[in-house]
Image (cartoon, rainbow, N blue to C red; front, side, top):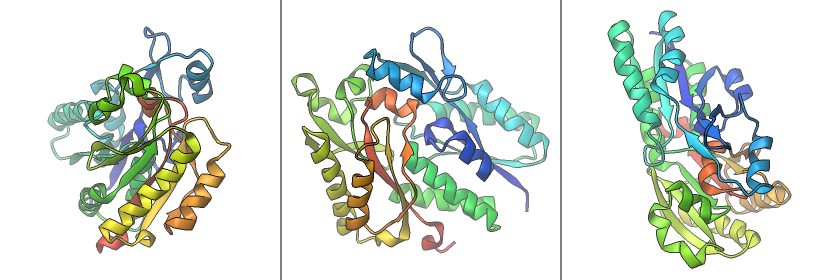
Length: 296
């Protein structure tokens, strides 16, 4: 069985330290706060600096996806070492990172015809993408083949969810990512939409006018999901995340644990790629089904 290396674009928000621990190779997005110079997220510009620009200067950053060359440069060492490649990307509905990876795959397959390079649209982003990666690496560590991991990803991405509250709808408007929540714009920009990301598509799960009520609604939407789907929450791993507001995260996590008995990992910080379009204050919960629950 050929050895394989797991990759992801940086939209997973798993962090470079955790990625190194799990032997996941990350290809970061680029962010710009002056709309001219772009820097690799976290590696070349810190999240503290990024969120200071958004909150104190009321700025609207820009993002740029990893280039084809970024993917080629990331994949090549693994291919030269004789490994196959398994890479997941942020959902295609929010970025063209998938296309960059697919083009890199086509170019490298000419140079490494014996190698297997698999690129998958995760249908996810941020913490849910990170949870999926953690399950993938757990499968790899437990001796599962790349084919089994691919089969798991294709199943898990259908059941995974992100339920979150947008920090500031104006960022969705300016970033051109409003889509199905377009009806909430204009004079209603002061509201906080509850967004559900499922199947790679964004949908509206509700609206609120205060952060406290929004967090409670996220819990209710999560409870409703398991009630309607008939799924057992105990089959899932989960994590709560926020951009830059931590004061109420312990209470939010406690509410989630009380109402939805999933296996929770510590809360994480949502990165610049996502926050550029959802604004500071974005908070939510991500959950992904454990691989054993599909029979692998």
